[in-house]
Image (cartoon, rainbow over all chains, first blue to last red; front, side, top):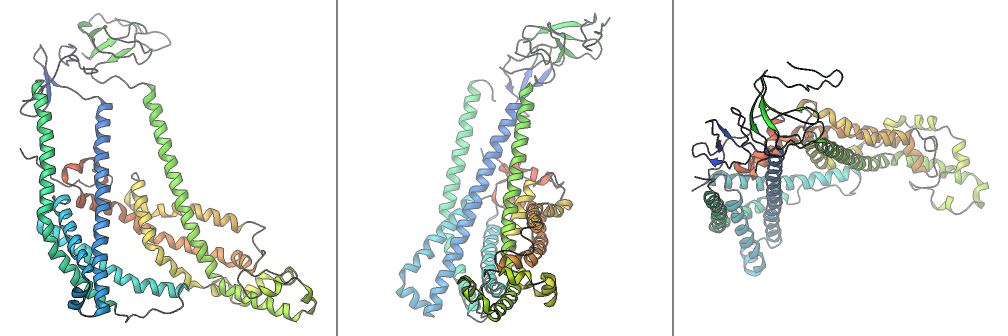
Length: 226
Length: 311
């Protein structure tokens, strides 16, 4: 029973009356015996509680997305620079891939996880802009790291934490180029993860829609829905 | 005919034009005496044609077109939550201030090393020239050239600290200003702290946000000034390091704190924009509604479009 609901025209107390879901505007409507139609107002406490639940859902989703973004971007950057660093040691990518099979797992697992996450969690983006934005974001982070490393060394030398001045020609440019190449390969392989991510998204959407349909059936059984 | 009580200001009379239209069936407490009005007649009063219920105990009128009041506890809980939020803000400002104080203290100590080396050399020369100190404890001889070397009381009392400082060109010249570049290493953290504080202060307009950075350095500045005005600290200490820090290091620390406001202001200005960007990028439109305040606080319209539920 509603805590309070009085017909504005005749003053009849409508608190005990059950509202009907109006088909056009989807509002919970009560038509009084005098003919005056009014919607069932929601109590401020109930409304505030629903707002809190909605905010909680948004904040938890946002936090989870931020954690996932940080983790997946870090894994991408780490995998690209790790393979590039190994490539720098052997200087021949064929030898690297031939003798170091353990390098292949970041080339397979990381892209699959990345592609799945992009397809499942960022489905509100268009495909092309999604991939372009992701490539630009990770490339920016990687470039920033390669720019920051000599700068941090220079600052530490200037402050006095380091005693040896940094060498700007220490092969950072080559390593950056190779890291970007490896990241490009990772991006291409990420397409493998797209079907998996799409399947996760579709399953999640179906679950949500089915929950909504069940709720609607319940309401219809109680005469509260069309 | 309406009768008004002399002192209480409560309308206790009944208007003759009032017509009874229904009976209240829900629970509704009188806002004055908390009497449950359930079962009381609903009347349409004659002046404004409003629907009202009159309390039979104190004759206070309850308006029926709005929900019953939540009582006094609503206000009490609001005060409790406001106090908790204030405590969180004060705690956060203290934690931020503590971090800033720690950062700048390290810079202040580092900046005083040239002057400490200068004093150490002078003291070492004095110790070596003074034969009467050969019988002194070993600590004077073992820690002569270190930053934390003990300051010899006899020697320091014969010196004029201001003249000594002036002989090397004053605190601006002798301080190692390269350490201020150390702030550049901390700037990402400072910008991040500014971003978080921009979200903690939603009532502040964007153009006033950079001024809040001055408020954030107030706590560490306060601690520095307390230490600076401490008569037992200023002038000389147990070690050369203490002495030069009280002479030069605190001034460098204050300059570093003032320079900190630049990355902090950048973070404060960027914070809300970054938050909006993250919400737009990471949340689907149907979940953005509850975070629309991020747009409203800067007078912007939230992004259009909601996700259509597929049937």
